Each structure stands twice: as structure tokens, then as C-alpha cells.
Image (cartoon, rainbow, N blue to C red; front, side):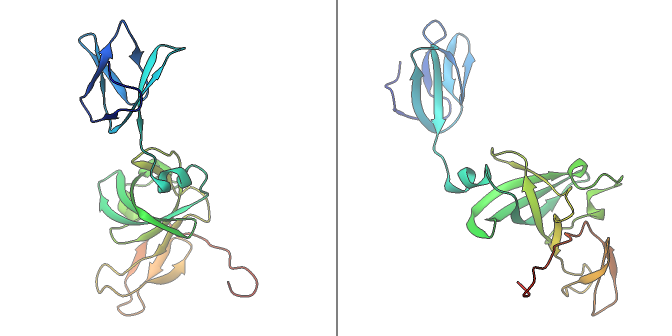
Length: 188
């Protein structure tokens, strides 16, 4: 048995199942309990449960209460996008990995996620959980793409209508899930 508060690495043996059952950040294999994360050992003497408590990153703590985050789309599959979150409610943070599933973009049917977002787009999204990777949604009107470049010439695109952006340089029109942001009086 490890000491209370001892530093743990994934795969470190904590105890046998007869002593404590696995809790948060642990798993059992062949009658023994192991840490699944980097953390500190915490033995719950009342519930007879052992936990490996991970070190909280400031950004993860802030995400629990966040109304929205800003991130850049760095990868696409047919039904999901990988997003690097860099801002939580306009407060810059270290990069946190997030993902956006096609079902969390709109209530309309999409053939592919590339109809709503593309690699390089900056999106405003709402976090759905506080564990990495952060699940994101764009289903509210104020969520979606806030900055995009033309896939042909790389020029910053402008809003054409509710679902399309237009390149002022080459005239290319692309579909996106656009964030419909309200501008406050006074221009801010």
C-alpha cells in the first residue's frame, strides 16, 4: 500500500482489492488496484476506496463554469473536429484539447462536418464537460465560426448570409455554422 499523498504514475500498484476498491483515476487488474493517471494517492477510509487524484490545471477548473470558449479547428474527420482551445470567456489559457461532434453543430442534417467548420477556423463554442478532451457544442445562435479564411486564396472571409461566408478577394462562397453575435450599444 502506498502512502497517503504519494506521487503516482500510470501503472503504479496501489493495493490489493481486499484492502480498497478502485475509485477515481484507478483500475483493477488481477486482484490489484493500479493508478491510471499521474496524480496523488488518496485512500478513502470510510468508503474503503482508493483514488489517484490528478493535478488540476487552471484552465480545466475555469472550463467547469464557462459559458463559452474560443478555439481553432486543427483537424477534421467526417463526423468530428479536433479543436485547440486557447481562450475561456476571453481569458487566454494554455492550449486545451477539445472535440466537436457533428451532432453538436446544428439540428439540421449535415453530410459532413466540413459543411460547418474547416481547418483553421476560429470557433466560439460551449463546453459540455470538464474532462480532456473537452466536448464542445455549437448549437446556440451565438456559437459557431467567428473567423475563417478562404480555402482558395487565404483571404479573411466576410458574412454573405446566415449560413455562408464570401471571399472579398476571389468571390468564393463557402458554407459555415456562423456565430450570430450581438453587438452591444457603443460598438463593443
